[in-house]
Image (cartoon, rainbow, N blue to C red; front, side, top):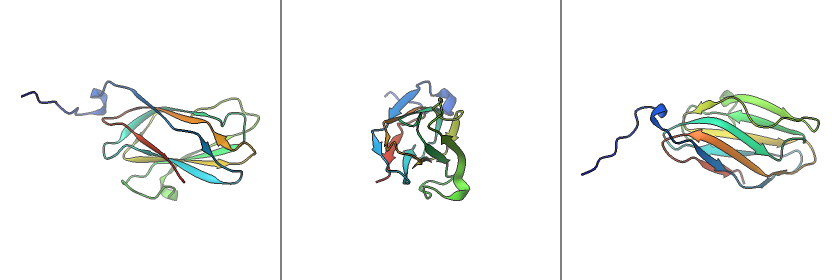
Length: 135
C-alpha cells in the first residue's frame, strides 16, 4: 500500500499556487473585506496584486488574526495600512508574510472608482486558499 508523507514544514511544499478573486463593486465611502482562508494549515503569502486600485483613491487595511474564526477587523489584528492615491503609480502589496489561519483585506473606497477588478494572490500552503468577498 502506498502511503503519502505529509510535509513537516512549509519549505517542503514545492508548489507555488495562485488564486484570483472575482470583481467586487464597493461604493464611495464604503468598506468591504476580502477573506483569505487557509483552513487550519496556515499559508505563506508571497505577493498580492490588486487590479483596479492603481490611480484611484482607496485605503487597504490588512488584518491577520492569531486564532481561527476570529473577527474580520479586530483592532489587535491590524498589521498594515496602505493608501492608494489617484496620483499614485504603484500597486501590489507588502513583503511576503505568514497567516496562521485567516487574513482579511479591508478595502475602503475613498474616491469615485467603485470597482476592484481582481485580487491575485501568490502563496505556498499545504491546501488551496479560499477567497470570499464580504456581502
